Length: 269
Image 1 (tube, one colour):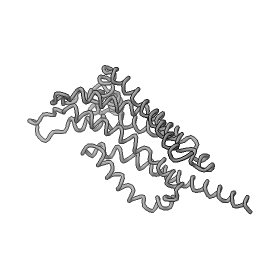
Image 2 (cartoon, helix red, strand yellow):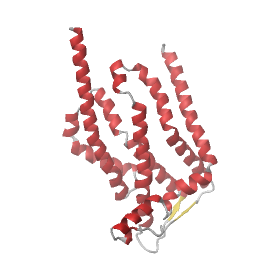
Image 3 (cartoon, rainbow, N blue to C red):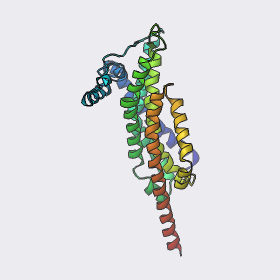
Image 4 (spheres, one colour):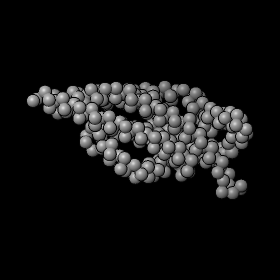
């Protein structure tokens, strides 16, 4: 294919990917009651699943303080277009989350033919693992990081006379940032996989700079999360675990590559 043919092929993959996001966004926009009352505003209510699970855990170990009876803050809109703007933004974010597996599959269909045969074999199942890690990160961000961050920030006061009255833009932005950040940060093993294939990363290099990587993870968590230690630590812990898994993945990819090169060399001789 010529360069222009490649651009034309890429254009159609992008069109199909964006179209899938738009379709899910429209469905989310029309399902306002379900999306807002049950999903977006869920972490702001004491009956949210995470709070109930923590309460049940606290009751089993005899700590009633784990039960959250109320969240002492209100969410309001201080701008004329605040609610409508957030309705559109939240619909687009949900459309992106729902359409991510298909959108990635479309882009992977464009990239995969350009790989060598051995690379295609090693990257088999890429769409499944990328989607799995992304959805796992999204669920972790929504059910773990977001409610604990909302609870911490909602209860934090510098003085009793200062009430917590959050703007809807601030609340939605915080929830969307935490969820999307977790989904993207959970792609670390995939990133390490391709960097190892490119020869830019080795298991020994990752082990040598493990401490530096942990510092970078903590700094990244501080940047992409609200300025509270709870959400930063909650994001940092699984990333440290994923970093350890990435070392194993890098070692596996390197071993497979060396075996493949050895077989090729033997066949050429």
